[in-house]
Length: 409
Image (cartoon, rainbow, N blue to C red; front, side):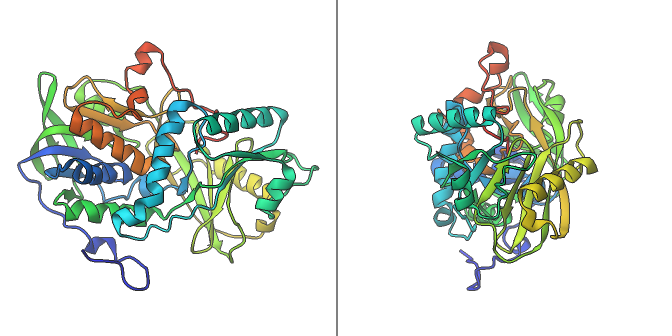
C-alpha cells in the first residue's frame, strides 16, 4: 500500500485510485461516490468479502456534500434509535485511522450545545439523561462550566441570548473530511472495487420488481444489487425508478475564516441562533448555519442566512469580530418529515436507499457504511438501521429528531 508522505500530508487524490471504464456487470453498484458510498464499499469488502463492486460518481469522488460539510462528529441525540446509530459511528471514528492506515486528523475536542432559555435548559437536561441511559457520554454544565471549557464564549448575562449552561459531550469532535474520503477510497481500491468518476446515472433497466442494470454516461452496466447513496439527489433517482420518497432538498451553507492562531478549544453549537463554530487544524474558523427554507439543488444559498449566522457568531464570540471571511459554500441536503434518515429496502427487491440525513450525514459516515453493507450482504437490516426504513412513513413509527438534539447538525 502507498502510504502518506513522512510529512503527514496525504498525496493528491488523483494519484490514489484508478478511473476505469465500467465492466459489463457488477454484484453491487453504489450510486454516489461521497463518504457514505465509499464507506459502504469499504465495509462490503472488509466485513463481507464482496469486491465486485462499482462506485459511480457523477463528478469527482467526494466532491459533493463530502467536500461541503463542516466535519462535526457527535452522538448525543435524544431518541434511542438515533443515539444508537450515531454512537456506533462514533466508536468506528475512534479507530478509523488505524483501520484505513491513513491520517484523518480525528480530534476529540468535545462539543458544547448551549442553552439560552429555561426551555432550552429543560430540553438539554432531558437529553443528557437520555444519553446517559443509552451509554453515550454526556453531562450538563452551568454557565461557569461553559466559560471554563471555552473561555472565549461570551457568558455575560446582558446579551440577547445569555448562556444559561450547555450539554457537553467530551468524545465528540472533528475530522478532516477530504482525508477521510481519500482513506476510504484507497482501501476500496486496494480491495479491487472500481471507483468510477465522471459517470452520471441516466436511468435504469428493470425486470418486474428488480433493477437489472444502470444506464450511465459511460455506458450501460448490469447489477445484482443497487444502492443509492447520492446525497441531495436521491429523489431524482427514485423518480427514474417510478416511486417517490418523502424528501425535500434544501441548500445548506457554511463558511471559513482566514487562518488564525489556535484559540478555540472545542466545538460550540447554539440552536437559538442556529450557528456553530469550531477551529480547523490549519487555523480557520469553521461556521455552519441552518438550511435555506426553499427547495433547491443549487450548491449555494441565500445571503441573509450567512448574514444572520455572522451576527450570531460575533455575539457569542466577540473575539472574532475582526476576523475576515475566507470563503463560503453550500451543499444540498435531503430532509425527511421527521429529520431522520432512510436506510434500507425499497419497493424493488434489490434496491437499497441511504438518504435523508439532513445535516447529520458526515458524522454518520462509517456507521451507516457499516450498516448498509450488512443490509446489502445479508438481505436483512442491521439492528442500528432497522428503525429507519421507508415504511415508517406508512406505519407512523417516526423517529422525530427535529429540534430534539439541540441543533440538527
